Amino acid sequence: MTKVLLFVALMVGAWLLLRPKPKATRIQPREETEARAVLGVGPRANAADIRAAHRRLVTALHPDKGGSAELTRRINAARDTLLKP
Image (cartoon, rainbow, N blue to C red):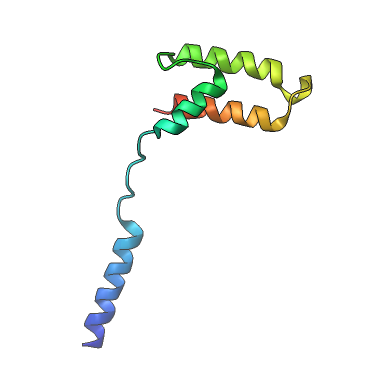
């Protein structure tokens, strides 16, 4: 009986480690709205518009040009959020 319980425990442990992970969920509307506000693009902006807005903001607010690293991080995160497939 002990061997059966040990086998079952090992199988459950293996299943927990090897099971398929859930798929990533869609971007939350609040995150998407905040990202669009950071970049200054509307809901109908395409990938090219998002990249152009990102480039414009990073050029103006880069730490080497007097901006802050935190602003650059937020701009990059907004771009990444909106361009995720």
